[in-house]
Image 1: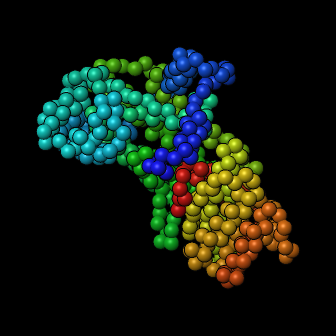
Image 2: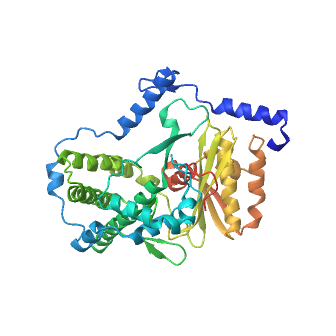
Image 3: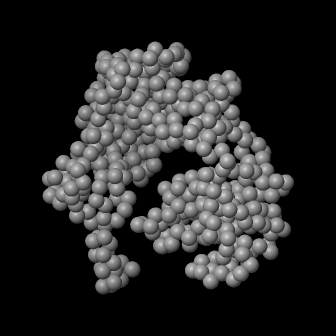
Length: 436
């Protein structure tokens, strides 16, 4: 469209520019500011407040409870002098055309001409990593704020990303590869908890594969028993890992930089991290109140499919969450499916139900029980009368697919018993494409 240089194209571009333009920001007091200098000050204060150390209370008991976690052999590996081979591995692991930093050189420049600059660049890396040189000259990063919504007005409506120099990225990659060994300590803590009977793994798939945790480069997934005791035991393992890592990091700063952090700073880091999972302390009370609304597995060979949807009326976006399980509670299939420009929450729920039926067809399920927490949808599907509401076309299409199955039923359940599908619907909003 742009190649034709039409008036319509220019109007579209102008409208988009006007739509996404940031005309002002709300400061910490909720007042809208439009002056450029004041906006810059507000942004700087926001990140200073976000990353500044908060005053913490005395936590001597927490420190006294720490015990040895990282063994001496592993600690020697972590603190060993960095080698040229680690630089090469880190350089090759970065995508060639990732956004460049302030110097303007993308990764592909270094990768293609590595044979020319290898010795000089490698020596610089090793001098910095082995504390023979300061990295202040390259420690410069461009921060870009990506709007999460059209015309954002507050800082929490932006997603910050940092455009770092390739040299800086390689140094951080080398450190990350070293730190990945710490995740082995976390894995070991989980394994020990399993051996002691504190944690139990989850069986997934038709092969009943036992899984307790999955570690990725940008996040971890933990599995365990869905009970009060299981959740509390997992919290304890996570807290131990956080505490061990903080102590190990502080020890290395003393060894390499001669910098000794105050004990309250170390404890502050641990407390701040643990505070993010503190809300799980309410799980006992909530679980006891919701015992009568627990999800129940199906009988015989029936597959129970739960569906739910999340809905943002302001942004007019929504997402379906669908999960299918057998009589043993094993997940047979699951997916999330985003939708746009749907103004009615009932319509969103109806589409989620239809998507659940579609998934059942694709998986060749024959005996299914479809559960949802929207009474209106379930009532219309179980009614023999013709529906004349705004979702009548979806209700008719769902009913039209019933003959394709050997047996199908629709059942209403409270939201408390539909948490798995509800959680998937919320998580799916973070992705632009369907997730299976």
